[in-house]
Length: 135
Image (cartoon, rainbow, N blue to C red; front, side, top):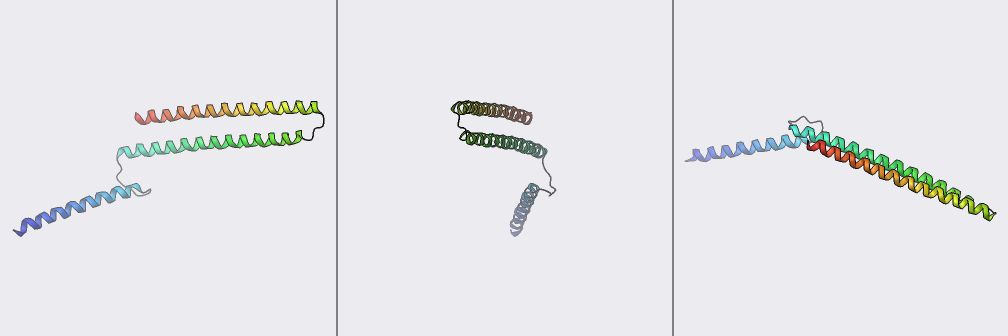
């Protein structure tokens, strides 16, 4: 009568230990540098994560460069506006103001066009990444 109880307890203990070992292997394989048995799809996920990280880094770099360009243009325009206050001739003031106004709107147009191109390139790259990931 005790033998079936002990046998059942032994089987339960063995399955619990086996489950704990499998869980430990899974958790340990998530840490970088720890060798583990990763499934084939794990490599695909790592490649996708790396590509996604590179994609985001590229987008952020483009945005930072664009903002630096905008700030430089804004600083240049502010300096030009401050110089307008030094002009005494109304005709010259009008001509310089119109010139500055035109430069400002040209800068805004170029910034908008650059943002649109960057957005289109990002969407194309993202779509390409998703298509490769689905294939």
